Length: 95
Ligand SMILES: C[S@@+](CC[C@H](N)C(=O)[O-])C[C@H]1O[C@@H](n2cnc3c(N)ncnc32)[C@H](O)[C@@H]1O
Image (cartoon, rainbow, N blue to C red; front, side, top):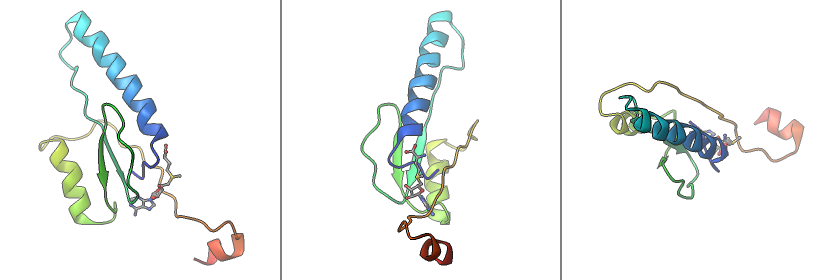
């Protein structure tokens, strides 16, 4: 959640897909990896990640995320939500 521009997603993709490859090699069954990255801002494509543009406070966005998991639950949610700032601290705190 709040994933743009996408560095956390890149790290998660590399880590989880690498682990998935190891699981396939050893015959384990939990190799399925689904990563959904959501942000208000558009994101450039990231290998192994489904990017969704939307506001995490809206129900339709939550439903869009849930659809990616086909009725199942996510094992992990990471969120780095932060408002856009102007850099003027008094103004940003007020906003
Ligand atoms: C600090 S950045 C996240 C950086 C990200 N962790 C990464 O690895 O690239 C904060 C993000 O929160 C997003 N954001 C803030 N409010 C949001 C909301 N209501 N819905 C979706 N994204 C939101 C902003 O668009 C911004 O891209």
